[in-house]
Length: 345
Ligand code: A3P
Image (cartoon, rainbow, N blue to C red):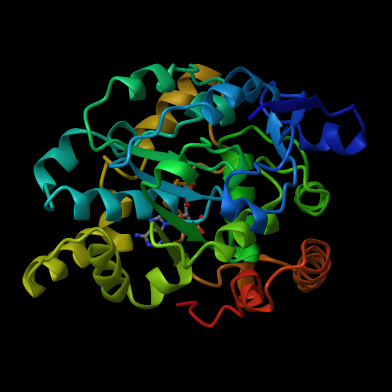
């Protein structure tokens, strides 16, 4: 399957979308819908907006050799992916708290497209080569949309967990990351403009979530939501353990709920990414704008309600409506996109 990376022509919106020293972006897409993959009939083939660095690895990722015992986590950025990685890794590693402390979650469960793609001053490590020689089972994360993941995912069929989060909380969380980590130079309104213009990295969000929602009943896919993790973490842990064929005692499960709580994750250096942020600040020579910013920030379902002006909420809800229509989404997925914020607090 061949990948096409089209340079996005410069425009006012592309200028707004720039961050760090990234001014150039590509629209990444497949040359055609894969004919021999039955689930691909359910995909929107929307191109994916990415910093130009992704060009280097896009085809290599699509061609990546998948193993049947690989364990994948896929999700749009800022959807609780690090939280889900810790959940999955612990469940699949017999709750090995000792090893989980020794290595960071990014080392145990690397991002296939490499942190350096989205964090411009971060060295672009060759994760693909490293993964190729890693022992099984390999734990692999990606923020890429389904059609740009390795083609073999859909033929070899390893277990894949997808994590979805509502649009407004994801956008709120992403805004803080863009401003504090990515060196985004624009205003809040500029940021909302790029969201609506699908010029935030990995866009389109709606196609990303809806494609996996359509595949949620495949036997090798577990579809989770951030909101369910907030509402009933124990229930999600039980469901995930069952998916991976693991059995734990109530006491062990309660221990894991505690380990994954916001209070513990925020102060757990192997998951909270604070050291990575400090290293990134040193590499980029730029401090976070808000000194109190932390990667594990608020951890709320519904934080948008007190951070997002009413007119922005309305704009994003209208955006969801038009994207649902454009993509022909299952009406059921609307509740994931919208989320009325009842979890707050
Ligand atoms: P907020 O910025 O809204 O607080 P990702 O890992 O995909 O980048 O997602 C980051 C988001 O997940 C952040 O959201 C972060 O606080 C939240 N998160 C991480 N661990 C969490 C936990 N234990 N409980 C609730 N939210 C958590």
